[in-house]
Length: 247
Ligand code: PEP
Image (cartoon, rainbow, N blue to C red; front, side, top):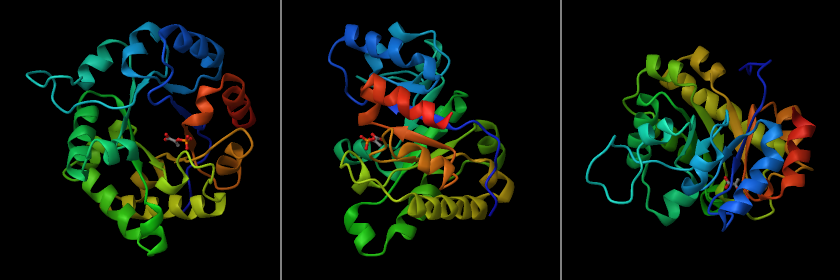
């Protein structure tokens, strides 16, 4: 299937639970904002980095408001100038027991708030070794998109990040060739759920041990539409180099 071309690659920085101090966050932000990448800092720093076109949250809750101690809704994020939300990151699935059902609720709430969801999917090393990757990705996508209409998806600008868990933070990235295959598989799955047009228009990102040396290969060789960058997004020079080689 032909991949939609001509769209500027979407580079997303996932700072995870870093840095420890707001001052450091502002310093890092000031060094990387010229890249125009989507920056997803810890929740507590979002407001101090706004306004910035391309501010993202690493998570959200699915309700708008109410008695949900410790949670933050998409509307609250939007109100402070956030446009993107990462949904279903493997660290949230693993450490906070986020099921596909929870991911589906969060995705719906982000779409309803008219924010751009970055849906993360990916298999573990064990699942890969057992040859289960295709089924795992299919289930994660189908469950995440359950009960979300074609119309809503078309208007949502949904992005899907293929993030093999065995490649995240391990220094062992997925080969661009394999990432390309996974990108095509993801489009095939979306095409079956909706149609070819929706599949072609959905940006597919790669994430997992991306750095300034390998980043461009996922865009230029694998033909993917963007990157989700964890560790390397915390080093200003490394991240600026990475983006410069792509955009
Ligand atoms: C991530 O957190 O989504 C990620 C891809 O991390 P890293 O780049 O450190 O592997």
